Length: 220
Image (cartoon, rainbow, N blue to C red):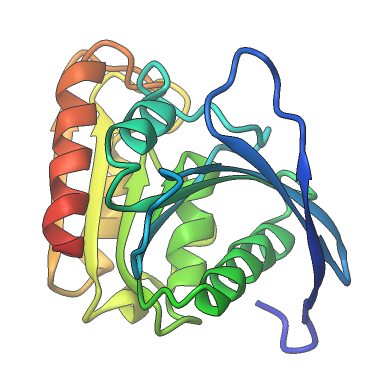
């Protein structure tokens, strides 16, 4: 991260999410452009716990494992606030990290003190890089992560780290997560899913349950 990068939230608005989506749209107006997010929470929710979800280099809200982000966000919306973030500038690591930090800043104004970051592919590097810059972050999940942008993974500690990867990933081989795990400090966990490709679709139900349970344990 370059030292001269900074971002400020100037305002926030609602926006109309696609009919196919669940949750409600929240647009963060920042000094570097607008960040579109989808928030999942019950109307009466009062909590200091949250999750930020980000996708791969192409951005968007979907995530891997057959819509796992949406599935988990809806499952826990009565106790934990979830924010799915679409990057302002997809595939630009420093700008995407700033998107995470802006969302964390917004959550802090709502009184949040415990946040888990989840990222897939390119997003794995985004959440690994962003984690050390906020005291709110207590856990990081990197799914099918790329290697570029993860050299600071040791700085995540003492926060918890979970690495998941498909053993048949032809885009980003599972050895990448194994190397990230090697350089990370405890507490850390890794699991490779044989027969799964980059999108982790083949074992989506198992992976969704694992991630949800891991996050609930970290945020309990």
